[in-house]
Image (tube, rainbow, N blue to C red):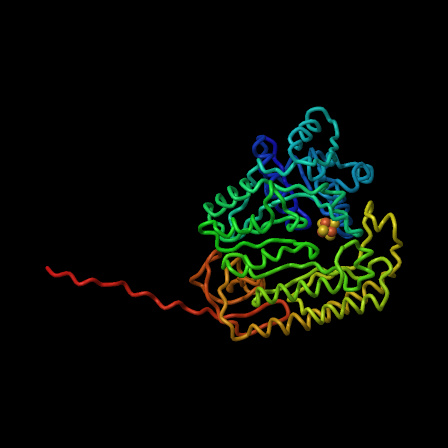
Length: 448
Ligand code: SF4
């Protein structure tokens, strides 16, 4: 029985894919191990979204070189988005690589590993499928509080900066029934929360059913306390979904809505297909229908041709919307994208860095203000894990996906408890447990 060590880089979709890969390999008599020292096979499930994600993997391959040369590791494989994006170039740049396989090739991994081990043949598979959704594979999840389900794969939006349509292929949705059956199974296994994943969840379509239909079915699953999803595209957000979130307690009041840029000129260059006004109108609609919602976002600073005036528009949108939090990145040109082919990456690196710093500074102020508005409120939170700073305390999340740290030694991850928010910083809320009054047993008088 060969032993495999799998490392995962990048987004939640990659974490989910790693659970699929583990299930595929275990079904084919491979044993998953927790470290490279025990492994015959080392696989890296990679990300291609930014340049530093690539650099990380090349650095990791340098670290593995000596063990591979000494024969302690028999097979090294690169999987995922970077594999799909760089293909043979990866093996040319790093000769220790035996397998390069993209996100639609995971079912072929047992065969590719055997080919290296038995015949010494390197294996490359970059075929992208129009149909593969892995809906027939039950992911190998570790026990926990949250479980992911990928409801679709690929993306047809072709935002000009994004490599995903080239690394993950065309958009395809999983059958509704297979998602709902998996969700029932997850609840039976004791998970309290499910996060539905897709590159653009609002494009979900299966035999006439859309994302709102799917969420309505998720809301009705007995015992499923929380449903989250990521990410929706602002261009086609279904208003019916907002009403469903408002009506159902277990559909969480948090929407991650990637803005990317505030200026119409840059949005058009990015092929985001919405304007600043449409984005602001959508935010207003969201807050009208779900008043107690949190909205988070992604922003790219320094996209091709972004002027100071364009950048100021992004700052203005941030001030107007007041996102609860934001992931802010420097634009990093990705090979094979439309921007790589058509536009010049002409914003100097120091200007990008400076814009990121200004955006971060503004967002810190806004996040702190919004978090401090929570002080005094009572929130039901789901305990996730010990707090990193103080393991004697818990990190839990509100419905709005805000992290709350508090002490409650009698409770465990997976428990829902009520806390009063007593303090707040930029990233974290601090709470005090509200003890539920103990219910006294009902005593029935019995006449003897
Ligand atoms: S919607 Fe745009 S940014 Fe998101 S995965 Fe698709 S192409 Fe990339």
